[in-house]
Amino acid sequence: MTLRPERAAEILGVSVRAVHKAIERGDCPVVTIGRLRRIPTAQFLATYGLSDPATSGRLPSNPTPIAQPRLSGAAASPHIAVARRR
Image (cartoon, rainbow, N blue to C red; front, top):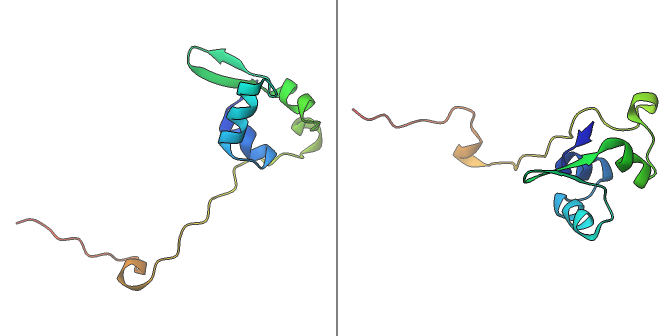
């Protein structure tokens, strides 16, 4: 089983760029498949001292949503008028 760099970043609480830099430095295990980079889950967990999510439930099962910016005025309305061509 492997992780995408985005998921690894989420688990570690760092940016995706930080994960890519760790891969480039050789600090993070990686398997390259064509142009894709995948991180072997077991090696990743061992490298960063994390426990297996299957036995501990330590890792989140789904990503945390990113907060959306708050809009004001007409843009805040859920009903936005759309001009139609005739």
